[in-house]
Length: 513
Image (cartoon, rainbow, N blue to C red; front, side, top):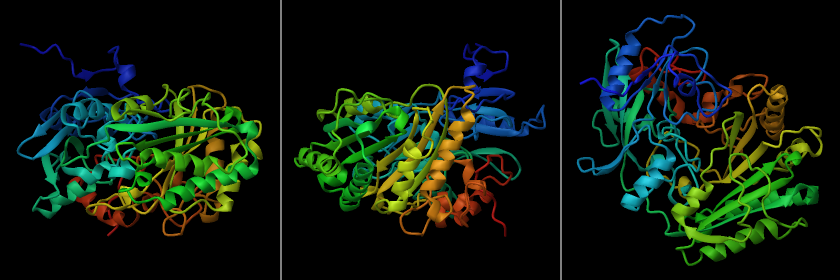
C-alpha cells in the first residue's frame, strides 16, 4: 500500500515556502527539495540520495539539516542550499533499556523534552528556554538554560549519539558513538558532539542521556523592570556591577544562591525599560532568602524604583504580573518563560564573561543603548541580554568540547525587524557598533585568555567574527568559539566528513597539515 505521507517537498508544493525557511526570516532558501525524514533509516537513505545527485544549479550545492530551524545565520537556509533534510518528524522520547539511557530523537524541541520527558520520568535536560529550538543543533553546541547553574550543560549528560556519516567512498552509514566506545575514532565522534557545534560532522538522528537531573518541584519566579527615564548613569553602573558581582560571588551549585538564575535585559532607551528576570529552586529551604538577597543586591543601591514589566524584552516574554516573586511548579514556570518571539528577521552576537564588567565596557553599553550614541534610533527590539552562568557549568563531570567553563555571565546581543524594513542596515549597524564598542579593549570581540572575556557561543553564530572590519583581534572565529578544542575538532571533521559535505561559513575546517 502506498504511504499517504509525502516526504519530499518540491517547489510547487504548498508546504515548500514554510519549509524552506527557519526561525530567522532574514534567511530564505530555494532548495531543489526539502526531505522530511521519520526514522534513522530514512535519514541514511535521504542523505545517500542527496550525496549521489548532481546539482541542477552549480551555485546551489550544500546539503543542510534542520531540526528546529533556529540557526541565526544562513547555515541552514541560504541561497547556496540544494537540499534541506528536515528532522522535525523525528521527535520521539523513550527509555532505552540496552543503553540504560533516555533516548531523544534529533527533531525534538526543547519543549518536547520538557513536556514529555519530565511528566513521564521526573527528569529534564538543563537546556534552553525558547520552546521551539531543536535539539539537533542545541545539544551539539553545548546547550544551556535556567537549570544550568544548578545542573550544568546538556552535554554533561550526553552518553551517546547516532550520526549518519558520509564515508570516503561516499556511502552513508549510521554510527552510534558513546563515551564508552572502545574505538578512538568512534569515541571522538561522541566527543565532537559535546560542544563542537551542529552541522559539522554528519546528521544526528538520536541522542542518549544518562542520569539527567530531576528539576525542582517548585521554583520562585520574578520579573521586574526599571523605566529608562528614571535610570541615571550612576544607577546603570551600579546595576551592572552588582549583577556581575553577585554571580561572581555565588558560584556553588550546592547553595540556593548558586542555583539562582538571573537575566538582565538591557533594552535600547527607545524601548522604555530595562528588565530583570530571576528564578530559584524553592525546594531548597534557602531559596526564598536567596531571591530576596539577589533582588536586594541588584536593586538596593540604585535610585530608580523597580516596577512591573510593560515593554518587549527581546526573546523573553513580558512578565507583567510577576514583579512580586511567585511560587509555581517548575514545568509551569518553564512554560511561562518559553518564548521564541514572533517570526521576524534578526541579528545576534555573544560573549562569555569571566569577571564583573570593566568601567570601559559599562560606559560603552550606556552610550550605545541610546544615551550618547544612536540617540535617534527607534528600534525598540534592540537589546543586550546578560544571563547568569557558571555554577555547575564550571564543574563538568568529564572533558567535553564545550570549553568555556569558568565564566560567570553569558551575553547575547539581539536586534529584530520585519522583512523588507527599509531601516535594516541601521539595525545591523547598531548591533555591530555596540558590540565592537563594548569589547574595544580587545579588538572589538570578546577574546579568550585575556581576563574578563572568554570568547563566543557557537549556538549564537555570528559571521562578523570572520570579518576584519568587525574583528580587529588576532583571534579567529574558530578560537573564539572552540578555544583549544579546535585542532582536535578539525581532525575529527577530516575523519568523519572527508568530502566536507556538511559545511557553512563557520563549519569546522580541515587541518592544514
